Image 1 (cartoon, rainbow, N blue to C red):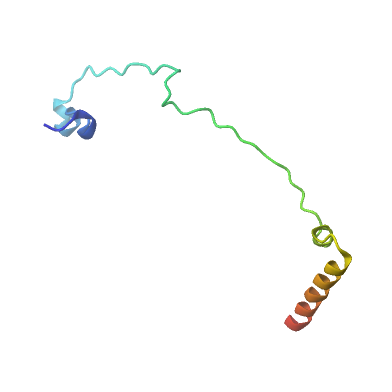
Image 2: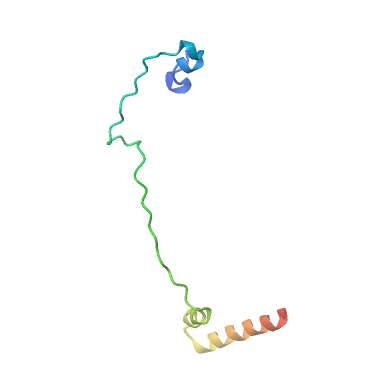
Length: 80
């Protein structure tokens, strides 16, 4: 005999006219850990800074920033 938790209740496997007519479902207590929690939605309004500002903030040394900008301009010129 297979366990009840594996197959479920027996009556749904029978014809509908053999199902119990007085099937009563008990109320589920609010403390039941399997109940779904009320969904919470969090929103963060992140403003994306200008790409130039992001580039300047990414480099702490002037010579590295200058080199990065030179590479960007070279790639841009090659792609056009």
